[in-house]
Image (cartoon, rainbow, N blue to C red):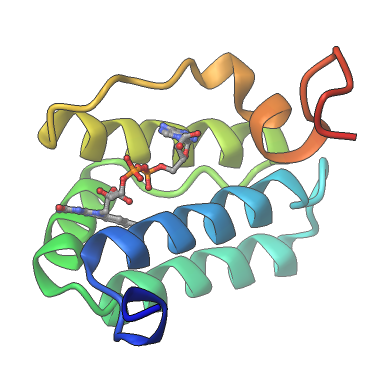
Length: 116
Ligand code: FAD
């Protein structure tokens, strides 16, 4: 009960945020217009500025400066984000995720229909 009603710590915030970001990337257009590409770049820039875990945001800004957002398509954005998440996974000593499965995880669900 308590945890549900307490402010989010960096783990709860991180899980919720990755869910949002990967789901957003999974529904990004296959062929975005230049204006949609600009909006996504602007969104990610603001996100990296205001993400409310300062040390997470600092590392994310430095990672995304080296690896600018790939906003050219759903496939590219999903893979880029997966790689950014894997960067954090490595830093925290967690398993890497297979980026070929990002749409299965965040959009389509497994072929056995267990999420339908
Ligand atoms: P999470 O890492 O939150 O992952 C949730 C689910 O996403 C997993 O169960 C898995 O199904 C799926 N997943 C895992 N990896 C990938 C991937 N590469 N691509 C697609 N899906 C994947 N915490 C810190 O302690 N220090 C930090 O510096 C830090 N930086 C962060 C930066 C950002 C931008 C964000 C959003 C979060 C950050 N976090 C950081 C939080 C951290 O990444 C985790 O969210 C948190 O530790 C909870 O981890 P978890 O094991 O529950 O799964």
